[in-house]
Length: 207
Length: 64
Image (cartoon, rainbow over all chains, first blue to last red; front, side, top):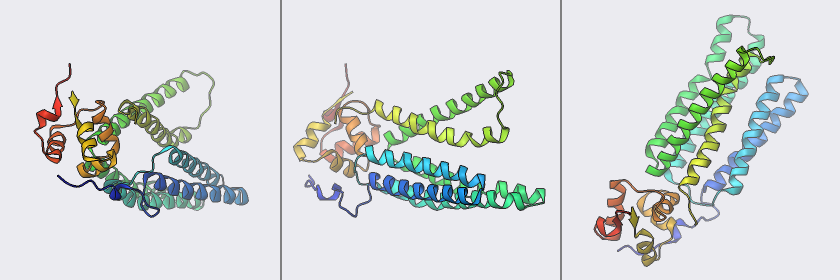
């Protein structure tokens, strides 16, 4: 029988834990968001303000999650996910910023279309990272994630469908179509976060 | 399904995190199995049985 060895699971100051990873990522996103907001105020670019609010909000949520998460050693599958997720997300943010900065100065329709489609390239890498993480995590983690994704996908899809019905029912709301399309992704991620929290609670007990 | 994973782990002096690392699963998964909130798949159940050196039916038994 193997001897108990607790030293391997104790988080030392250099061990990457879920709590530390969330806190670090949250502070970077918050800092980036505040920088974008300041730049938006100084330069009067509306898209910088929007990007700043999204980044700062995401950072604040991650830091809040870090506050309530346990200080547990991060497993190899999740470390790999972070190694693949952050470069892809950085590429996406850079291309979105390039879109916001260059589209108003681009005359050609084809050029504007390319700028709009270009951010999809890092998204392919992002999808690959997510699929690899879902495949390689343990069976309960996979079940929780898949249930949460199903709930988030259905709620977001039918939520937006009902919202569309409300708009077409002529109840007096005026919403720009591009704003509706842009909010699908944040709503999907937000709903996934809440759904994951609720699904995880089903498998928790007195610890 | 009922199981004796908590007792077997306690007898070894392992924490949930220690057992999770040995099984290559998360601590949350070990906790869910011990508290009966989640029934492991056959491969994971066999892995647990092999780790504790006991037959699978002596660790897991059908619930009422």
